[in-house]
Image (cartoon, rainbow, N blue to C red):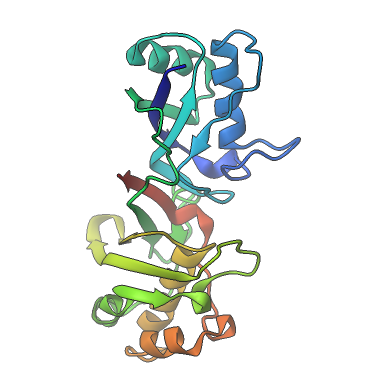
Amino acid sequence: MPRYRAVISYDGTDFLGWQVQPGKRTVQGELEKAVNQMAKNPAEHIRVQGSGRTDAGVHALGQVAHFDLPLDINPEGVRKGLATMLPFDIGIQKVEIVDDNFHAQYNAHTKTYRYRLSNRDFRDPFKRNYTGHWPRRLDFAKMEQAIPDYLGEHDWISFAASGFQAKTTVRTVTRATIEEVPGEQEIIFEFTGTGFLYNQIRIMVGVLLEIGMGSRPVDDIPRLLASQDRQQARLTAPASGLYLKSVDY
């Protein structure tokens, strides 16, 4: 059976995350429903394997997944066919045939996440599902000074929410940036790394917000990493501002 790799976008607002859960609406569940419908009652249920999970309310600009079809259909035909079967909050950007050994999760080299933060003094109803909201004044220069401390290989246990299932909490962050969008009163954070723990990005952003407010020292990130104590990193930014931007292989 040909193996297909798909690049997927989705609005995570109305999903209980990526992973299939009985009786719950999930991105993986909707994709598997469409893929199996396209395969026309296959002998075995076809699984769609993503590059990793996203949580409830988290969006994706470039999630990657693979699946096998018991039909020889050209990639563009698969993309167009799935587009007619999927709900409007999931979009298939691209489909291609890949080697049978390709695995969306295990072959991933790095992932990039974006976090959008609205810094307006009121909650914009048109952004409420697509940005985190922080109405208090932030010192951008302090956050810009602190963010490079995330770079490198570290044990990220202080930045992992309870319930994570990773075998190791050591990860490498290769890129960490912060940018102001003055006209929109938004701040954009981006992080690239070999992988991220459960809620890690949202906790990383939360620590930067505390630094920006002045409630945490600018040089506090190395101490937090060394402490290996989740209770030291208090704030978790809302899921609505988080996007899986891309996966690189």
